[in-house]
Length: 226
Image (tube, rainbow, N blue to C red; front, top):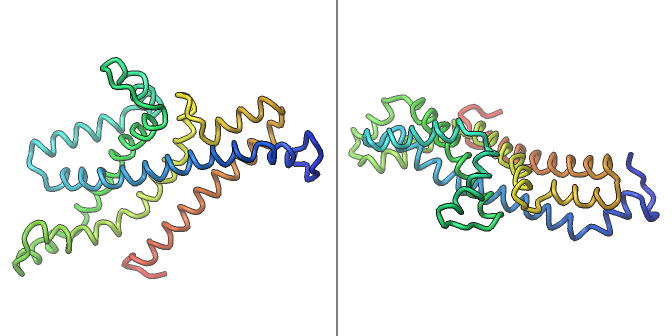
């Protein structure tokens, strides 16, 4: 278990020696997670609106994408993005291949979440906006989406948590994120339990922060204040 002395061979000594590697791995995990959540939210909202209000052919394409992406294991998607696209002459750096794969996966989940949230808004809200002369884009922007976004906050936060945990799979294509960094350090000092507990604590802190921010947003924008 954790030894709180700073003698050579102890956890704290080895962690200090590897501090720059750990910080770099933590940065890669956090940046990949943040970019994935950002891209997935932007594209997921657009696709969710298409699922709810798009032309029939647009809804069909969006539905095929969502069902296809939700049915593929994320590891398969990561491997295809990195290795499979190279068969078509598209060579992506491992980091960006991982971000794109995670974003494509999370986009499908956020799109379906938004579709459900939009369709849960009473139809009378759209009709009321139409009655006062709002165009469709205005009704969507000022009436429907503000209510839908509030309702989709909890599952959106859950998707964000899954994205952070999903970054551990990027090590399979050589992205030196937090987990792979710990594996490399453990291979040198054999402090297996200490460093994996430390990595688990860092992941827990990241996800706890996301959950805390999500809870604050939910309390801020929810219909029921508690």
